[in-house]
Image (cartoon, rainbow, N blue to C red; front, side):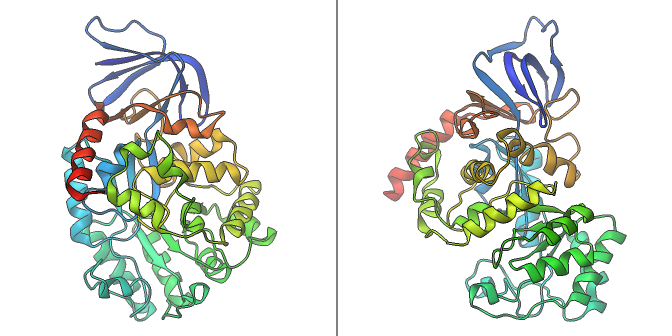
Length: 400
């Protein structure tokens, strides 16, 4: 048992200036005030803030990345394209190992033959995967993905024009058929988009979540109103649109010592992308219209690293007009609600004890999320010091 005493609590939506939290086993037993059991481990929360474990709503998870994510307080990763074998392996490992983030996955996303991201098969990143040639295949495609263990359906609406590499793309009819099939089976549909036209196709089809805010032009008032009316959530992935933050995240002493060499390389490999200003303007407008926003990084794209990138994403959401508390909700209670993660995203009695304790107050200074004092997943405290020692050994062996 663990009692975190006299701590500021951000419960996922609001702040309790001072209270205590009792964790028994995997669960939060009570929040507020109470008499702790005599044998409870006491942790002094004075000057600190307790948050729900963070949820990254857009990752591409590979072996090892959920451990790195947990080292930065990310207790759940929502994978948006993976081989079924990798997704099943990570899900099974996380079920029995509280020393890594939990993983939910779309598995194989729906795309046209030779459409994006088929190019990744030629690079050996993914094995060849099923594609969708016409709308009549939609129902079978969705049922096959669910049979493989997918938690939601990813629909890729990408013609490549925005990035100068034109590729085959799903037709609007195919997108509608996929969305309808997902709805009929009771799972969420998530659409990859990079342009206003693709995002409009997704909204017209009734997609539940947009993965990425488009970057070919800022969102106009009509689109923002349509997204709000449809109750469609958006995962902006501002870190992906930024491309690289100039190495500032890796240089932060609260972040750098806990970066795996591969993660450090990912953070510094990219180059700044001018589209970030368009993306920030779009997020500001969507936020003003009340569109649900979810924090996600699109790790391991350049400029992001497992876990670490989400702290930059939170900072960028604040730069786009969200308050620090609203940005924190976008990484805790809101994705838990949208993705139906029962018992996640809140500091509340009866919820799973996925918790992040930080020094300072991230509800006024969002960068305080980087000042990590302790992490728990399913009530088990993550040994961050041991993780850092392991990284030193890896760095020594690799010469990084």
